[in-house]
Image (tube, rainbow, N blue to C red; front, top):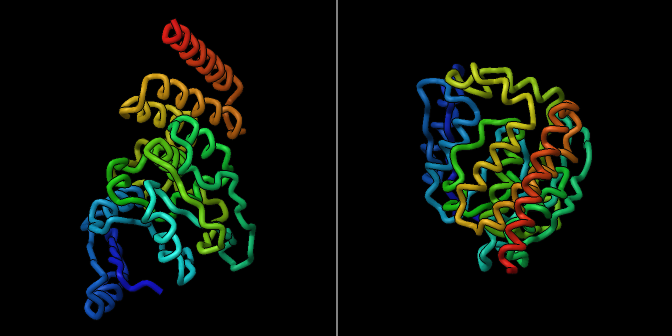
Length: 277
């Protein structure tokens, strides 16, 4: 129901007639901008590329197999444009590739635009077990570009959403406007060149563990311009999330993470005491 948009199609070195099909559409609609890679840059590289090419004030990623209600853009745009929020996201319906409904993702996050503290916003976002679904919301283009490249770690979409929470608040549209097509055995994609790209396939081990994801988020947090106290708190929340939400962490790694979390929290408490003095 909204016609003022730019549709960026990035053909990632396809070997069939995908490009020709898209070209036919682009020839008949000036809103469609078509680009093509000569070599396979991987899905993550392609995510980076379309975001960098975007010219509008707001941006959203759109995968080829998901579905959107006709009001997706207009309702998300209406929710975000007169606020300082960095992301607007709707309720999501996840379903299997055979078309059967799987579940409605009842997100526990809600809106966070009234939370001023970056670490508290992050803590709220971490409470959402399906926070990866927020990755497909409508975000401010300038913020999306600031956070690129896409994290080259396991659960990269969740990592990106976590970094968005540091940047600003989210607004929630409580309607099913997005339908995510879930793929059985989706983790197999991390072992393929189609997902990682030719240059990253040799580094695929870090895509199998969640611990590198937490490390990545923490490193990015420490490069932001938030206060030192907020950095410590956000780091602690990230480590806590890594412990409580991921059942695949090995026992010895879990103990290591707990020690680091304890050290970070103690250090933060010491800083608080110094500030009070």
